[in-house]
Length: 367
Image (tube, rainbow, N blue to C red; front, side, top):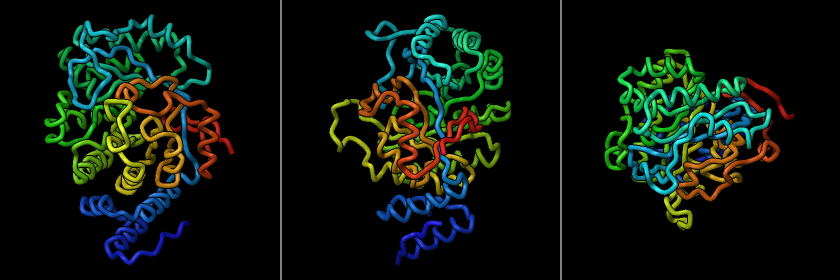
């Protein structure tokens, strides 16, 4: 058991007592933790929770990120991935074209395709169904973790089908889990200001609720570091915590550190390492009903990911191969990482690497 550094701070002591006795933290508690500069105490407390839930095990997966199209009707202020039809660099791949891309990079250890893309109105809903079916027919053993809640809402609009009907059609084609994207910050004020012209807060949560009702386990995210307040972040965590109470359908929470549009942007345009670690730790403390918090090396870098494994994170994501969305927005991190490097990174934090499948079933433990 870690010993939290003694602190004279009465409020921090109350939070420590709450966490150790399994009491749920409030909005006020979460905002207080964000306002505190005592990162070591917050991180150690989050580490205690992570160890209690998962022991020293840290999970990773051999996966590939795939993007069928970057053409998108939405114009979110933070996105540099999207294109309009006809723009230089705009593309829409057929199932066969994607299979050709995958075959160039595939090896038998890959267990998951992570599939997201633009909201492309130039193709019908059936295109998105056929895209999954083509992959599932060619690679039946690979799990299809595909589309965000915002994409499901978009498919519903272009097809006239309900969320349930959209998901059922995709499940017939091979869908096995939803990705977590599209959440950004679950605040209507934020979404209006940042031109998030896609699924609103209620719709995002309803898509995941419906997916959980259909038996899908899903992922969820938070994109932090722009105009939102600390209270917005905590309210976001409380939204997903409430849905998890209701359905227990989320597998993992992934805090995503906002990337500047320009890759040459200086450090003042990026979240600090302090803020990234604090967000992971606070997420672990607030989300008492989530098994895993992910440290996403694509956004925070491999070395900070390693530190995060001692501050509440129990998942180091996966090999990815070639990430495009964060890198279109100026990420300076690797586009992918090897299995060997992931194992080294986890062991370097004094943790036990565990290769998993999409649903956190253990494939191999690297003692």
